[in-house]
Amino acid sequence: QVQLVESGGGLVQPGGSLRLSCAASGSIFSIRAMGWYRQAPGKQRELVATITSGGSTNYADSVKGRFTISRDNAKNTVFLQMNSLKPEDTAVYYCNADLIRRLGSRGDYWGQGTQVTVSA
Image 1 (cartoon, rainbow, N blue to C red):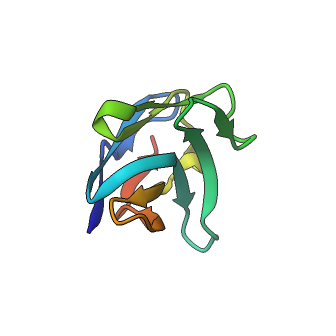
Image 2: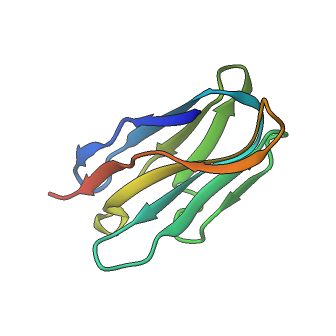
């Protein structure tokens, strides 16, 4: 089995910063890409940022210049540094991994989500 465990969410004031972490563990041969998505109340889940094993990144327009995604391939961990947070960034943030398991099958896995609330 594969597990993704997120940490780092919480309550922060507008303009503040948070750093999310997500560690993947289990029967993993390699991870092709990892990313962060978010879902606000009453809205669909949306992409925040992704990063490939080679380090190529992709960001939603709404977070460009404020959020930075990075990863530690040796530890199967992805990070999301969030700066200049706005109330509209409030959501549950989910970690995602596109990976190949040791048995050779490719899978798409999700973490349990971590709440980020930006409020004064």
